Length: 412
Image (tube, rainbow, N blue to C red; front, side):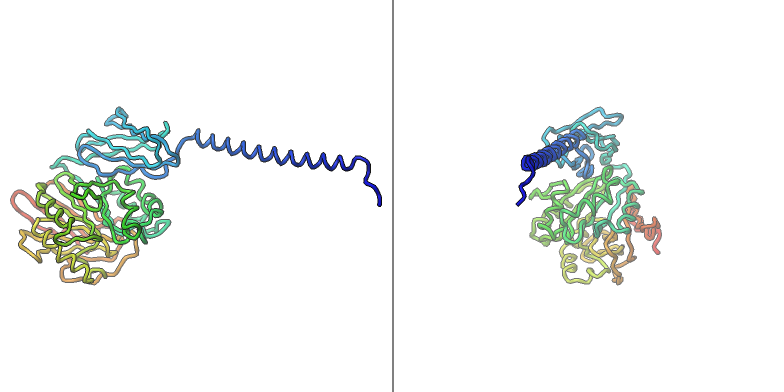
C-alpha cells in the first residue's frame, strides 16, 4: 500500500484546527452581533404598542392608559397652554396607568405621554363640563367582529371620529367571538385609536365578552368607575354635564333582590340631574331576532318598571345587529312619561333583519352609529350610516314649562 506523502497528516490536522477556529470566531461574531442589536433596541427605548386611551373622565380628573414594547416608567406632561405639569410613576411597567387630578371642568388640556425619556404621543383631552354646558356623545354596539377589522367597522369608526364626540358609549360585544384578550388590539384599539386618545370610552359587557373568564380581558383592559357597594366595574354610573348615565351588566343576576337591581334603584333614586340614561347590551325592546326570546321578555318585565318609575329618558342597548327606536313606552306604570328605547347594534358585526313589533317607531338593518347631543333642556338623537347619511332623528324637549315632547325630525 502506498504511504501518504510526508507531512500530509500534519496538513490535515492544521486544516481541521483552522476550520474549528473559523467556526468559533463565527459563533463569537454572531453573539457579539446579538448583543449589539439588543443595545441598539435598548438605546432606542420603548415603542408605543397600545393607546393612549382615556378612561373614567370626570369634571376634575381622568385616567390615561397606554402600553409599550418594553417596561419603563410612566410620565404624563400636560397643561392648558404648554406642558406645565407632570405626573409620573417610576415603577417599570409595560401597561401604564396615570391619573390626572385637580383639573378644571369643561377644559381642554394638551398632554403627552413619555416612557424612558421617549415622547411617545402628543394630543389633547377635555374634562366633563359643569351642568348647563352643551355636549355630545356617540355610541356603538356589537363591533369587533373580524381580524383585521371589516370595512363596516372601519367605516363606522370613521363616522364616529368625524363627529368629534365628547365621549363614547359601547353597548357590549366589544370583541367577538368570546371576548378574548388577543382580540383587543386588532379588533378594538386599532380601529378606534384616533378617537379614544381624546374621547373617553364608557363600555358595557356583552354576552360575547363573557366568553373568556366571564369578561376577564374586558375588566383588564378598561378602568371604569366602581361606585357600587361591591366595588365592581361590571356596572357603574357617571355624570356628564346635566345628565346621569348608568351602565348595567345583564349577563349576571338582574332581578329584584339582586345586588345590581338594588343598586340600580338606589342610584336612580338619588339622581338630581335632569336627564337620565341607562345603557347595557341585551335590548329589552327589539324587533330583531333576539327581541322575540323569552329571556329578553323576562329582562323587560324586571327592569322596564324601574326605568319608568325612576323617570329614565332613554335606554340604549345592542345585541340585535340593527338600529331601532321605540315609541315612548309606559307599559308598567305609574310613570309621568314614556321611556324611549334605542337599539344600536350596527358597529361592525353582520347586520340582522328586523321584524317590526308594535312598540317600534322605526327600525333598519344597517351599520351605523348614534349621536346624541344635549343642549340644556333639549336632547337630539341622530342615527348615521357608514356613508354619513342621517337616516333617523328625534328631539326631546324637557324645558321649565314642563313640556316633554318627542319631536320626530326625520324618519325614513
